[in-house]
Amino acid sequence: MTTIVDSLAHTWPPFVLVVGLLLIGHGAAREGLFGWIGHWCARLAGPDVTVFVVVMVACALVTATLNLDTAVVFMTPVAIETARRRGTDEVIFAYASVMMANAASTLLLGSNLTNLLVAAPEGLSGGSFTRALVLPWVVSVIATTAVAILWRPRGLRGRHRLEPQERVGLRVGPGVVATFLALVSVLLLPQPALVVLVLGLGVQALESLRESRVRWSQILAVANPTLLLPLFGLAVAVGWLGRVWLGPAHWLDHASVVETVGATAVGSVLINNLPAASLLAGHHVAHPLAAILGLDLGPNLFVTGALSSLLWWRIVTAHGVRPSLTRLTTLGVMTGVVTLSLTTWMVS
Image (cartoon, rainbow, N blue to C red; front, top):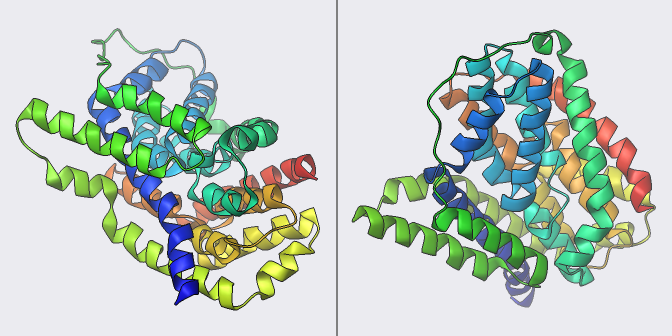
């Protein structure tokens, strides 16, 4: 009983955090934040490859501040619509957005649920975590963008200029303000999950008061309990297993940096990165930063690696892009191998 309670205690904060960030992201989206980003990107002068790079940087920044799952839900449509408005290749924009969401999720503790699960037993604060991984993050963002361009270079050779269009407004309301407060909370607080959840619920409450009604269907669609609850249950179960079966934790406590990165990346693909991180939660790992690289960057290798990929599949389908497992895996393997190879030595 003690081990299952311990597993629950270590597992709930990341899931509560992501729900809070998704609710904040939903509020910011209703205030026009992501639409404004997309409009600004689509209106940029210059070749399509320049616009693509800017969109990827925007995806990386949203991932870092609002979590990779929030970025997939709200920035994937932005990437697709930007490509369509310019008449350029929507495939590279759509597929690269999920690659960037995973690759850019190493900067802050709240950028990826796995970061909290692995960092908590090591006592890493938000500030120390970011200082240690800022350089690998920059390299991952640059490498992911470059790999995507090399994957489909013909799609970005055009130079499209949009006709003047009506401006898209941005309202600085509770969602935008809460985005900033959530960023500060993740950086400064050792346990930001409940604070971020309160911010997210506050944003939704204020939005409901403004409209004089509660949009439960939209809130449930954003929080996505049908995906999060089963994954939470699996993470708790695997966390319990990791506490009664010490084999994986013992092995990683004596593994090298390269072995740690490889094992966590493979584990992510086999059982998803959240359960894989839960398997390690509560135990000391010799190279926690290497484990985070494997858990965050490894999921690009295959669709089973992270919740973000499952969310992405649903989002692109809803926006008229037919997802292809072959395309996703091809780009994912290229991106995963390159980013893991370039960043592993940085945490040695």
